[in-house]
Length: 374
Image (cartoon, rainbow, N blue to C red; front, side, top):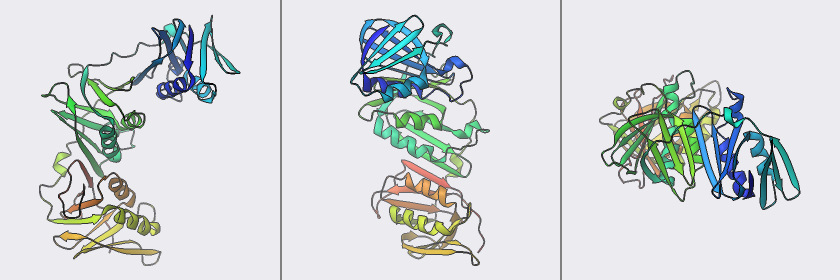
């Protein structure tokens, strides 16, 4: 293999591809990144049996060829190079990387032992990248960190015609994001369960000027693919039944309050300063005000009052302040509507553009109140 390539493009491609390599691969061969020079392109691929990554960039290919090298080391080397052009040349069992006055020689790994990457499924549909990124950030708010319950570490993605509904829950809260997309088949109706950590990783690396394509085969529903700007990822889906969470949304909320989102977030941050770890922050809704409080009589205390627009009876609810802030921070509108039934039943939060407008149902956040002592 003999290749001339743009250094910045090389570093970016290696960094993106090698991110799927585990810190301690189950098989040493999975520490490699495969490079293939062919037809004016340099192709990159990596695999850890669950997630695959493929990328390609333009290159001057004098001699075609395929090699496997240590991925993390290659990433460290390429991001350190400063010259505009880099040259890759193989000689027997080594790969020489030359860029300006820098020169590295890497031992090749046995590429014949490298596993075949999974076949990318057919395209299911596509959506603009900013819409997808926003939905992922909202839907992943409630992803569980409990690895012993894999189903709760995932995001359920429901593809129903031109709508995609993404839902996560960790049993204490629920986050749901809905967006419009362009399906390949307008009658599509299928559901997948994909790891939330992977979705966030995909969203972070997107070129937001291009659409993202989602790939899925309902006849072989084990793999979900993501394509954007020449980058292709696949992920094994989580095998398990997502909890029946739709019943948690109340049909009617007799108590509703609208408040400026940023004012509420700032007040929560201040009041929570005196809350001990895992201690609740209380919110007392009375008339057209909400009083936030935390702390105890024999310890530090904090109180703050905000103006609200409220309908319904007075009520006091208490929340984990971290969960409350995380859910509110995912609201993109300047106002938030808080919808309640009783002090112990889940409370729904929705964004809205104006203080007197209808709430948006594109993002719905449910949070279970904490019990507290008066």
